[in-house]
Length: 567
Image (spheres, rainbow, N blue to C red):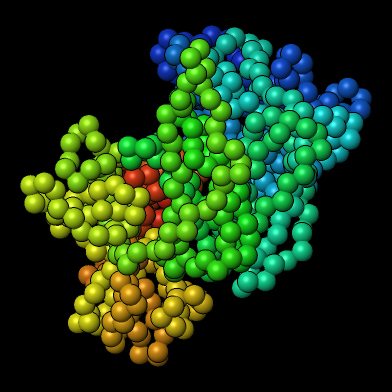
């Protein structure tokens, strides 16, 4: 096959892997590491240990070709160690990731053209060659064995932790049979226009399994939100689901607070998103020992305000209050409130402003701060990912200390060393710099509802004046267009930009700023072009982040112990 020939041309030093690579172990594993030829077999099996992916003749084209190489082996070497060496020094293939990608495609009837393909995280290099070839073979045999399987990743990784065996050793690659099926369609909402229902493909899974739509083929579409963001298999073979992909400029949101009668949190807040005149119903979560005053909340988005350009909603929140369940003489709890009490709160939005956290801080139930009254803690983070709070008024504690009362009735400090206004307000700035890892857009009006030119991170923008819009600030450019004055997106201080680094040691290239899903390894002394920067744990307000450098292919460390700044 052509793809196999390409592997040999690349000098991979292996014979085609496919779904059951065969390594046949040479005897004589020694106590001290020694380089030696080595082979072993990885066999795809079902839950009963039977070989799977068989063709109509009862054999498997996917388990018939060996892969081998020379590896450093001692008495502690595991199968995973061998694969790591193969990836770093041999073919450059991440075999475990290849199996994951292959499994993802074979559970989708449309394969790489279906729902689960993620264009922001495609198989790369030789990995892609292998997955493509494996999928070609799967297409030829799937009618002979139509049962769908998915890779059991935890069991697979556990099997690879075993120490290498003797000649002819076999390591099982465990797959799980899929019994549920879901036909997925999408509705697109662009510039307020709703498309007809568009069928995508049928995918297979198990009951309770979720599909994160942000990690599918739609994950590469910037400026859109998925409603819902996940799809869950209900266990039936013919489930049908339709999700909406809504342009952020059309998006509206309402926050539902779940609180107890004393004001403490009963359950995490729920942000409900939709568009236009849609109606959504949210069931109130069950809280042991309490009953809600609304068993469900009906949210009518008719007439509500779309989110601002920074994705912040300004519609009035809805509060569901939980009270302790009264008991009968026998101690049996009464039932929760009925659906007839499901009405949306009609509270009008107050005159509000937003602040962001500068330091580690806490949110409290009362203006007099006590450790026992803490609701949630927030880590210190860079401005781009700092927690944002909606302030409805300033109050004072019993000792006269200023506090900010928030939209949900909780309190935070008003100390300017810990919190600051979210928007720049000065008219003296002549230049602003784009600092957001996601970049920003220029807009034709101060409403920032329609998008114009995109400005990437690090861009310098000349501004002529500040324009106040309520408690927010926009900055006008010389051509009459506008950008946000949100501190999480722009700054009057020039950022320290880096365009090239050199690796001091071996470093990895990863798919995300959290440095997971490793793509490849750079050798010491490698020159790497940097296109921007980001931070780990960006949306996790409980953890501080670490700077990473963004490259054309992913993310690398920004730690000066591992990389040197060239320019």
